[in-house]
Image (cartoon, rainbow, N blue to C red; front, top):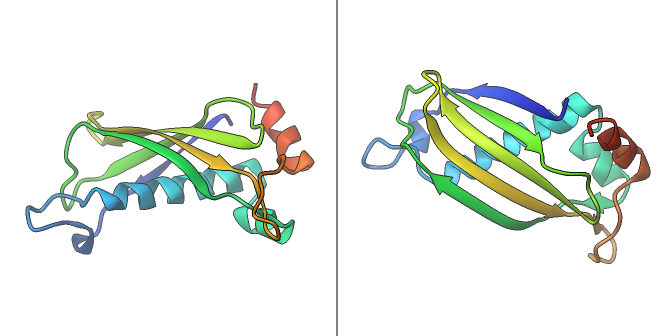
Length: 134
């Protein structure tokens, strides 16, 4: 399960005056997809936090290709790009039901100690589960 896909129907409140989903919501959709990916791996974000690990966003690169409008049904594909080190990198593709690509993104998170806020290695159990994907 190197990747997972979730389906989302944007809410009217997520659109702007032009009737287009506001660009900030794409990050929310990606976060929702990432949490689903972690759950499918059997390692929830809550488990990370309970283990004293935070995963703040370090870098985001989004390319907006086609607008999403209210009523569009979209899918968000999340893919683990490579084996995590102190960083974990996910790739995303947001598509409409007709297959048209709305956005692509690469997002990097850093494993961080919850007490010191310093970078750290991933939890061994998480890393072992990720190794099975490559």
